[in-house]
Length: 86
Image (cartoon, rainbow, N blue to C red; front, side):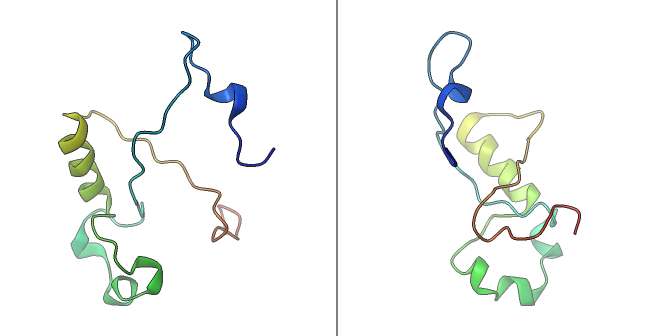
């Protein structure tokens, strides 16, 4: 069942993992200054801000407190059409 977590979302205490918040993240860019104008103007990024690594880390810290590590997982959304290494 594509898109279903089922048993994979069951934690060791038997409760279900809940996704509290999803942050837009483009792991290619460390800071807002790294984002070229053509990317900022791209329709994929329309209405988004705060998607660089440093901005997402600050947003997570603001929401949850100090963080030591942030793990990014590549989404399997319909816009992901090429293999990871391509």
